[in-house]
Length: 367
Image (cartoon, rainbow, N blue to C red; front, side):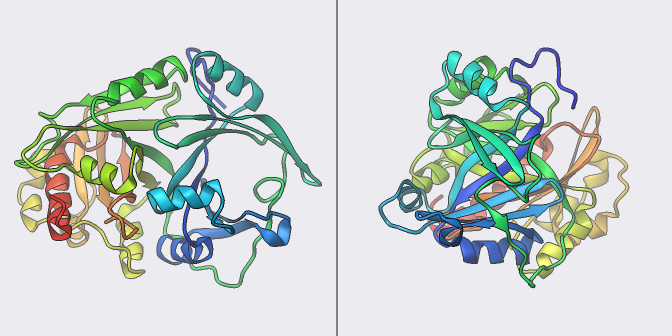
């Protein structure tokens, strides 16, 4: 593991993302079928848990945990009632969970879970946690002394149904939406509490259309394996996508999860064939693509057929595409991204992307 010397909170990377959902069994089937995640582990009444069921899915280094309440009188049930299906835990792997908790709480973080050790025959996992924006939690996971499928309390989940993976590799970044005037507050949190630096920022001149605007700053740890863009609304003629999210999620939370692939054409082709809905990009976007981004390895016709966006920065270029919200509420969605050297986030695509989002907002009557 290599981390920057300036990291006051050394992070190995993303450990897992846990979503609280209304029906974890059915959600697991969706992410297996549509996204190609593989079954890993399960915990629930059969393993001694009385208040929840959790299914663990994995694709390469991405771990997704889907958790549902068993009883209506629980924190999980309240979360689902208020927010709908949404991200609860952005779990980060660390070398020392107790030290990570001690350091971050001493710098002002609100504790979610004091350090504790979970044990079974496969070893031990140490966990702790702090709150970030909204009800979202950073769980610190220390698993260097564990050989089991996920962590103590879970058993291996090995069903016959295992659709092929679609080529997703790692979590590239997770985007948080926060309320009016809160972006700088949470960027300060990541800077002072977690030792992150600002990688890039966008204001309403960069991210605006005729109708909506937002502002965003990207915070990253020293090794850039953990990146958290933070968005807030900006004044526009009509309701922005951030406002729509905040209205329907009833507060701040994770807007989208960006998943890295080594071949976006193959990945998106597979996902489309499995029924995943992506935002529509007009054909006119591709008319001057080569003039805007220069030479690329991919055939423009192939990108146009799939609606894949391209952008370039000083380090290279990236290809990206966004799903429509994966829920009935217009809240959480996914980004599929391939990086050919670029470290940025597709600034040149914002106008096309947000106009595509606005078309969907208008159809929902929320623009």
